[in-house]
Length: 176
Length: 176
Image: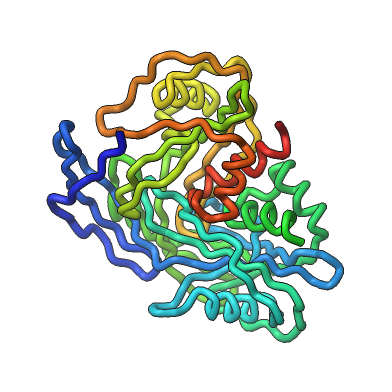
């Protein structure tokens, strides 16, 4: 049986720019008290942007937590109070310069529900119009257009190893 | 261009049971110093277990960080020094009672490389033999067998909203 957990107390550990951390003490029916370490995140969007040649826009970006450059779809964090669709339009423009005539939510998911509330909204963008990008001060990336077939095989070969990118491409391939 | 980031200093914020948190100060070429908030995690496995009827074993579990019961494939954290395949065998047995004759790594990915190093290894398990499960003290879950087709449509309908579960089912459907 699935038992919900009642919060007994909550200790704030850290309040940062991107994440906050708290440790909750919860009561689990018949099992006493347990600690739950929780990372709070404002949420994010990822955009599977497909051009007129059926290529997906991918970026290569260094990620400090894994000390590695990885392939990703364009993505970014929600600003406070921002609608996910507006965020997708903004991030696609900022990171790639593209504006999309059609933008459709194809999935939303939790990245790691065991320790975080982070939720990512995945949009499929088509009807792309190129323009100038405008990166944040602390962003640096390379942009590529790769056929959906090739991107799909990069997942199978584990060259793509980012959750939102894998989910976005696997779902887009069924829809395009 | 992709610029890597050199660590100047690292402040330990929290060391917990499941996660640890640090804030690194990094030097970004031509862009000065930046802070990077990083959640360290020991890694985890998820198992797409398929029975002789081509059904996938799914569990329903309450997740405190999102205050919600969600659908997931069986999964669990790596013990210190544990091989991911051994972890997959152990977690499948503990959570579902099943032992698998065949266990194959089909993907590994980062859940949220922007703020965490958490990596999840996804195994495809076939040739299932039922047995008794043995949950951890703080675990409570319900187990279901659902056809791969139905599980796939649960992703499209967003009833499945867990990253490892979506990736595992989408990839398994191409392999089974």
